[in-house]
Length: 300
Image 1 (spheres, rainbow, N blue to C red):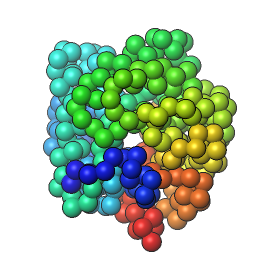
Image 2 (image 1 turned 90 degrees about the vertical axis):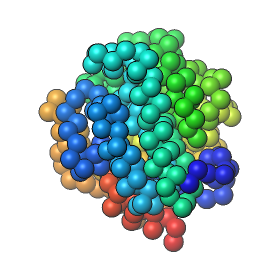
Image 3 (image 1 turned 90 degrees about the horizontal axis):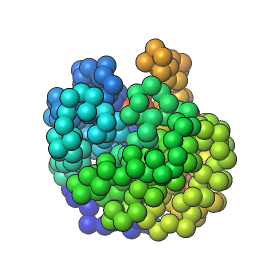
Image 4 (image 1 turned 135 degrees about the vertical axis):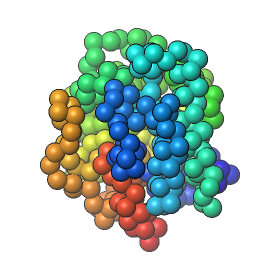
């Protein structure tokens, strides 16, 4: 059901369960994601599959559903021949589908509209590197139109996620000013640094004094990096922390495939809670089964 509380109010009262990877669930449902738009292609081609994937996570115990707009951009849709008006409609649809899935639940379900990094639009793995050669102002101009459309669609929060670079975080934080929707800021990290090599203390510091930012943290990273990063986020900002790492497998952008073994273990989330995490879930390759186990662990 649609929540009666704001996300910030809920975080002050309890730890909330995030969903897991949308793309892996879509693939489990038989969807072909071999496209530069990745899961965002389903917004046009099979929206019912996206709603079904959200519903699978809601049934597993997720209290926050992240929309399918991570790789959905005006530029990406244009390459596919989609005009700007239709692209805006598809972006808004991403929020509507998550909301529809959440409203079928008897629990409060918050919707987080995903705002992926510039590198996600490039579809070449550069969101794991950052340093695109763009200025903060250029990144702000890129992100603002999509943010305006997503905010207008009525999510509970904007998820500025998988951000590899503090410069891009600064551009994103500028772009959300005045949009009327709270945000969380989540970096993808390598140890104690962003993927672009900046110290996490400095990167998280960008959000420290901003009331619009209701949580800060990390996602799309190795589970082993999540706890130390959460500690830094909490110490620097004093805000609730969001943590949703990958399964632990490694993405090969050239081969467009995963390799290695999974290391995501819901039992380890107690340490994340101790570090200040109030929003906990999974990212790539973490499915409904893991989220169900995680939800049981967090609610014990």
